[in-house]
Image (cartoon, rainbow, N blue to C red; front, side, top):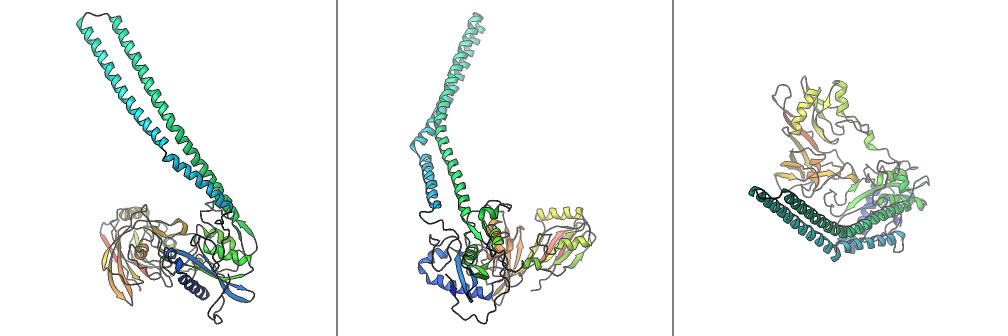
Length: 530
């Protein structure tokens, strides 16, 4: 399970601190280890079809008995199994045939089969048809009764008009007709009720089975989570239920504990190995809706892994969160009047105050203008023009223009490669990828996102492109550039959807809007530094 490096690593210095898994640059040893894992994956031709669909792999460089080697792991299972000699085992292998999970899963599957059989049974279909037919027949009878009553009344009115009638007999005739009509209505209602009861028995049986399935599934999931007893460097053990109990979500998400990083650390701790550094990379095609680059390193996920790794890394001397140490340069003012100020926000500065403590343009503005309010936002990694209102009235007036999409903006970006088209538009709806915040993903149920683009040139195999965002979704330009259904080429320096390594080469270069006080058109330009 512990693999020696195939090449000499004597000249590579070990890191003093363990990797911060949620934002990192892979250590050279991790890059070397990942390269060896990738060569192994290429050698397993029988896996190629599944690997092409995409999977996350991880490497953990460890020190053991004076030697430095590496461990490898995959997220989830691989070709239907958790057990492959080259990779560390699962923290808990639920795929064993005699395991309680598989046994209970079989019982739940049997309930599913029963539900499906009932849903498609001839008896249920007959009950539905009988109810529909009974309702139709009774409705026709009720209509006939109304006609009959109307005709009876018309006849009595005709008799009264003739002048030769006995009023008492006419009253009795009306009472008899109404009484008969009421009996027929009750009989029809009883027939419908009887038909509904026959269908209701089937539906209650199905709903009861569904409740049982849900109850057993939830209980099974919690029992499974309790089997994931996660170690940390101090030797402390917590199961997944205990780990997630203090979090906002409280209950572990499906698949928790099955990612590569927890598997690697668990195996290292259990076998007396000292973790040195760690990295995870994507192998294969990008999953539908997401942006994953083949062979690219990625941080650990937030929803599943952050609570687990926060526990598992206790006792290790780890790197601090590099985002907490960012000290961005101060913005520069590019235009100002009595109600507005436009700045060139530097890359690395937040637009509004955030939990990380990194300095924001909002803080900068309120230090100078007590009533300042941010009108729109730029990603932390994006530089360029940011307009700030100095009072509430100006803020409201300008924000209406952004909402109505009358503000014109353009961004300049450098893409990692060369694209085929010279201009066009991208319409890919976006929504938050909850498991990998703050990543966005393309989804049919996402919010509409529309971008127009125009290529301005190619520089050293990189494409300079100008974006005209029609909508303003989070990470819109970054996803539209990187996604295969968009330009299929990430923006240079994008550490979320691309390969990172440099600052994000995305800059808000121009903006045009109507001044909230004078009504004049304000056009601003701030050239990119790249």
